[in-house]
Image (cartoon, rainbow, N blue to C red; front, top):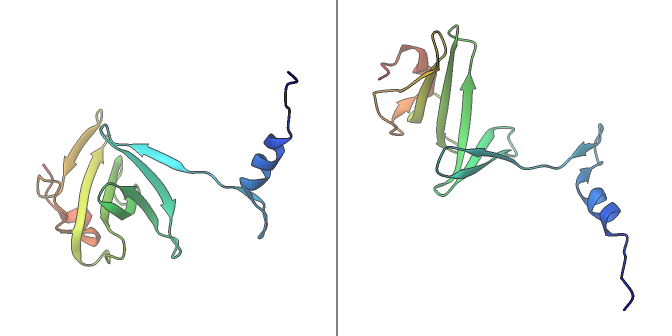
Length: 122
């Protein structure tokens, strides 16, 4: 029986690229893992970073410039304004090791992202 060989790989490589606008780019999916679930990270049509979880798509905000050695991570349903309540906010403090705390000491979606530096974390 003759072995069939095809030229499939170049076609796959071609379909992974987006060349309609310069510079040419490769289409990839970025995954995150929260210890339990795999999450897809992507950009929506408005340029917002969003994650896809079992609960649907969520907007993602990252701030590592407001406070030295601290990163604030905010998640909310896509379309939630940063000035309205509806954000889950965690604070990652790397001043001495890594300490992760939550706004209001919980992971509820009830905070205003714009207030992240003045919220109480625990």
